[in-house]
Length: 248
Picture 1 (cartoon, one colour):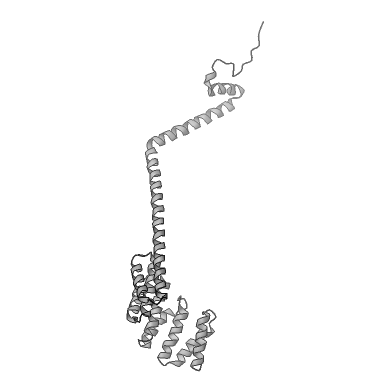
Picture 2 (cartoon, helix red, strand yellow):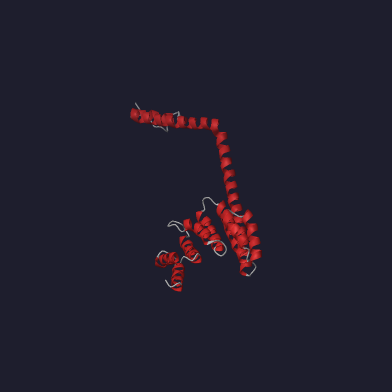
């Protein structure tokens, strides 16, 4: 009597061969499917071997790079925190100097600003140097104030707004003591169409022209300011008042 035998994967005596057994039955079902399995496994093995070889050669470098990244990140975070604390301390010191000035002690304010300018972050250092010059002027130390303003302007190369502000502040102080022609020569480039403080410079130019006795030129300057819709309202109002005062 002949028994029919159903071959099954589970009933074979080589159960531990795993993928090889599956490929036998897959090949029986169709060579193309079996070859696809083989190529997939070969590709997987190659990737595994490649990864193992790369790790063997460069694993130490990967670990070193990871450590460097961690240390670099920690250093950067620490530096940012140090910068933050330094900025807060500078802000507190600048505020204390401003409060001293408001309380009528510009001497103490100027001394505090001078000390702050030496070690504060760049923004606070610039503000401190400007403030120190202003507080020196409040004490009547005009020559010292002019020297501080002009030294600050000469030390700046890219911060044009700070530079122009320092020069205009010095020119305003020079208006009461220097020949008008000297002040006008300083104000001329600061009055240009692209200059950040051109309206203040043009107002000072009109005052210098009045001091020089050139009322005709002063009227032209003041009228231009009064008519300029881009000029700040305060500048326009003062220009109109001066025009009326000189009979313009």
